[in-house]
Length: 168
Image (cartoon, rainbow, N blue to C red; front, side, top):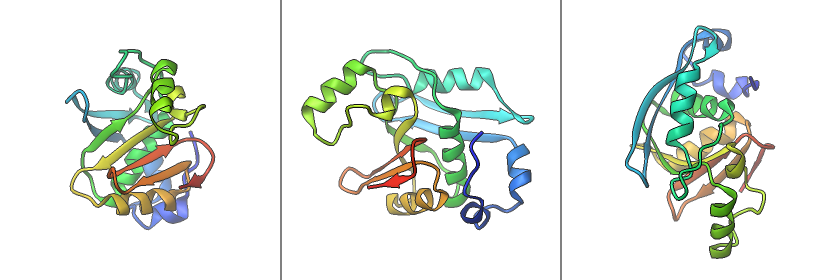
């Protein structure tokens, strides 16, 4: 498991980081392209819940091709931590896993799509948090310092990934 930016996160947590590490973790998702919903506890008893991870991987599949990949659970931990920081809500998924075929197609349509996108490796997601300003979600994600954070104000979503800490 990745170590969180505890100084920033501790401001948002009602309990100590050690207690957070042992506590159950859940997220709520709504996929904007498939209209699927999922509310799931994905971490419990100090372990990731395999069936819950399978459900998450399936929901976050490439909706264009149906291809599924295994997501980095640290990405789900980021979403959970952001819920604690911003107030619980449902994440509206704009983009999750992309097959190589889909990523190539999207690259032809926009120069903003990376050739070696972390979406292709199950290490990135583009979301907004219902009922919350996207700018606030971005600021909270930046404070965690747990990977890449991209802010797309016009499209109203935040890119999160488990790669190197960087922002755009």
